[in-house]
Length: 204
Image (cartoon, rainbow, N blue to C red; front, side):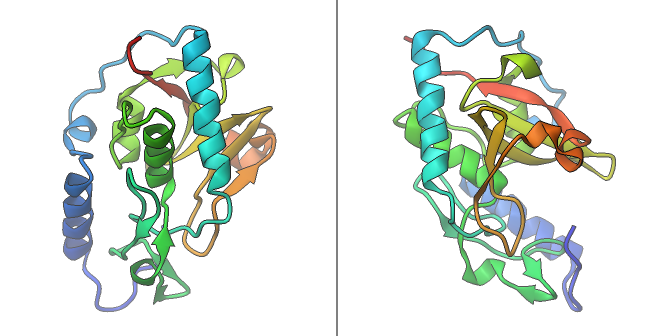
């Protein structure tokens, strides 16, 4: 978590995050209710595989876009904000002056854009996890979502699998959307990997 500057309150940050989540259609119900675990995703069909490749291509096109806490929606990069713990770099609020993506904003946008508006994920990591089917590590395909968790921050991060062991993600304030090669071979990410998930493609 980023440090909390003087004068910020937890309550104000939580209220702002909740308002943004509702405005983007995230809803907080999936985070509060027990997750409905769908069956493990089968190998993608030809249309689903093509959709996943488009998701990965849209993600690749965002490389270099700034990270903005709370930023991004179905339409693309958006203005972020700062709450009690996030959006700051060295005590300076960058979120309120940065147009970009946070991790779930990026995955939301890529799936919405690649599916021509037929797959819409919530702008909330837990909601995206709950709305997707589990995928075994050896069955990951481009476009799948990679989730990461720590004891102090369950499901704190999501990235987009780009194929060949790579992930495209928006990591934290002060960084740009980037591609990480062999992500699950890196101790930092491998140690926090909580699983791969595949959003449901539109029905044929």
